[in-house]
Amino acid sequence: MHIFEDYFIPEIIDPDTLKTLPPGETGELVFTTITKEAIPVIRYRTRDVSCLKFEPCSCGRTHVRMKRVSGRTDDMLIIRGVNVFPSQIESVLMEIEGTEPHYQMVVERKGNLDILEVQVEVSEKLFSDEVKKLEDLERKIKTEIESVLSVSVNVKLVEPKTIE
Image (cartoon, rainbow, N blue to C red; front, side, top):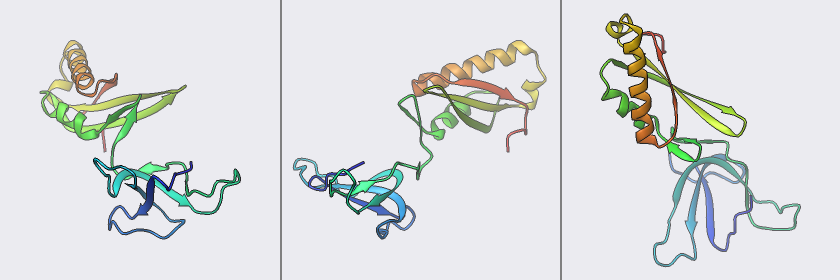
C-alpha cells in the first residue's frame, strides 16, 4: 500500500522502547500528519505491526509503501468490524456469579466471517449441578457479552481448571 508522503510521515518504531527502527525493519506503524491544521496528529501509534519499503514501486510511484499488516502490538481483535478487547470480556465475566476468572477466546474464520467463541470455566459447585442451571448461565454470559461488545459470540462452558 502506498503512503502519500505529502500528507503523512510514516515511521516504524520498536513498541517497547518507542525508538525509530531503521528502514526495512518490522515494528509498530506510526503516523504524523503534515497537512492537518485544526487537530494535528503527531506520532499516532496505530498498534499495527508492519514494515516500510522505500524502493520505487513497479507501478512507477516513488512514495514509501507499507507491507501488509502482520499483527498487532496490543491484544485487540477485530471481529466483524468491531474492536474487541479481552478486558471487556473479563469485566463481564467478573460480574457473573458461578464463573471462574479463567477464560479463553477462540477466533475462527468461516467463509468471510470471523466467529468468536468464549470458553469459560465454571465453578466446581455449579459444574456438578443440573444442566438447566448451566444452560441458563451460558445464555446469561452470551447476552451480557453481546450487549457490551455489540457483536454475536458463542459461549462454551468448560470444567474447572481445564483452561491453561
